[in-house]
Amino acid sequence: MKKTILLTTALFIFMSIKLDAKPGLGISFNFFYSSLRPYGEWIQLDNDLVVWHPSRIDNRWRPYSIGRWSWTSEGWYWDSYEPFGWATYHYGRWYNDDYYGWIWIPDYDWGPSWVEWRYDDDYIGWAPLPPYASFNIDFGIHFSIGWHSHYNYWNFVGYNKFYDRRVYNYFLDERRCERIFGRTKYRTNYYSDRDGIVNGGIDRSFIERKGGYRIAQREISLVDNYRDFERNREVRNDKVTAYRPSDREVENSRTMDRFDFKRGENRSTLERDKIRTPLTREEGRSIISDRTVDRNRDINVERDTRSDERRIREETNRIRSNDQLRKDTERDRIRINAENQRIEKDRAQKREEIINRESSRERQPVFEQPKRTEKQAPQERRVEPRREQTYERHAPRMDRGNDRGSERSSNKGEHESKKSTERKR
Image (cartoon, rainbow, N blue to C red; front, side):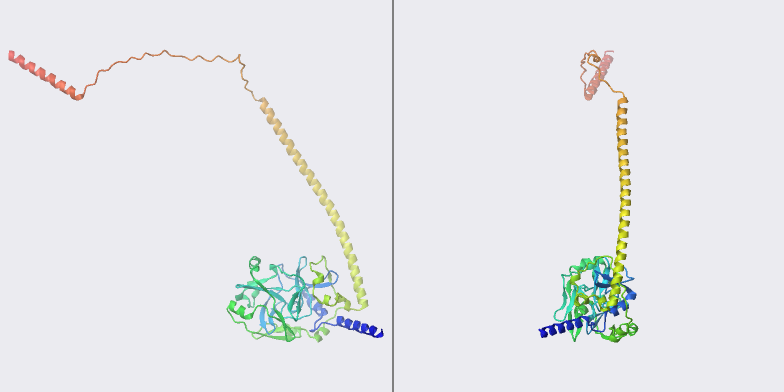
């Protein structure tokens, strides 16, 4: 019995030490918090999920867009030009929430980049892995849900511009992304090599063949001081600088007595129980629970105060909403009454027009058909006397030739009579 109690106690202490242990690779949530706070805001969602939202970005911004790709011994490395890129593109996951937009969920596993790939014969694209994706040394990336990212999450470019230093200038617009998204192939190619995580992505020789250029392998130069990283962050021909803070820098960083989280105004669309983050690995323990009991009490008091303020704000908003609803209802009632009066006025005007039209018809003279006795007698038709036709027979027409013959014969007779007269004399 005593052995059982001792074993149980030892197991409990071992599990407590394991849960309270800091993550490896010289990083902690406190360091994330103090380093990223100048570039965005920390939001506490759903009571225990803490996320980071970048500030000073437009609506078209997407993760893994302001930077360039480099081929290294650890695969495709994303070299970001943004001041927060050393953390958000090599640790943790990104998610596009319906209400909050792009948010980053911290994690402690370092990688050259955390993206998923799509490609065809003409274009290549990448998008950030969601918080549902976790890395396993045996089979690479594993999704806790059936994940299908939207085409708006992707950055697509032609192969000839993929390795450009300003690749963001050649991204396809949303319409073209939507058109080619369905015909591309999907790929994630993560594996472990020498206790490190490699992003194999799309094969380098395939991109070289499609793009028509050579891609040289660059060496990753690790620095553990942020000032050195800022000074040497430019990509040289043979090296690329990566920042991974050391344990000493993490310990020397400014510690926060109290985290200033912004309370989420709306519930997130994340499926909380499917997320593979440090919070779930710590069995749901809050990051804030690493503080002392007094500090926890202060935080709880602050939460209660915020909850009271939130309830008061919600009650005030509800009262304002009711007042606004009454005002809107009264405005709608006045508008409906005015509309009904206008309709009634139009109907009365139409009825008056119809009555006036009928009265005008009654005032016009109406032709009355005379009675049968009053009908005038039909006018007698005047008949002219019939003319008798006379038929006169015309003399037959003589031919012209006969007239000439008769004329000749008469002249001849006269001539002969003259000759006989002269003989008698």
